[in-house]
Length: 221
Image (cartoon, rainbow, N blue to C red; front, side, top):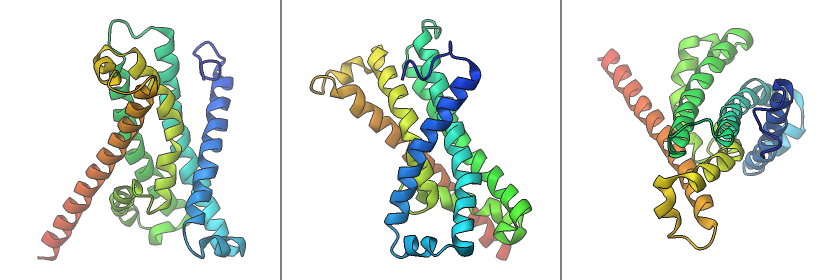
């Protein structure tokens, strides 16, 4: 990871590595998603509009989301390894990453859905409808109930090296890591941190759904 993602690499090579890792992470998770939906794989193998719409969704939504989120994390990973973070505890990097992930997931989904409505006529061509489905979609993504769940877990590949490295170097996490056997502590805590991100994303999205329903009921009244 240190060789693949370093600030000393040329920008184009760093970018290429992020793209390749993003594809390597995204493809297996998408295949798993398809495999766990009865009849979905057979429908896609039949070709036609279903396959073209699914591939368009992956290319225009999944890949940009996974790439941008991974780029943020790998950049932070490379920055952390330069030691240029100063006197800040490396736990600060985890906080920055989780905040950036939350913003990226919400904003990118909203932007892509609106553009899909404009360009492809998705959501009946309505921008309002496109925006209204963002929160319900993200609220269920952590449970792997929709394709956005595949995008969410595809970004785990960038979260793990960043969070493990940050936990290993953090004085704040040091006491906690000692409670686990050998070197398993940083990995377990890194997975827990990613789980926290997924829960926070789901919680924010669920709150947004609740507010949307409240407004719709208020408007109906």
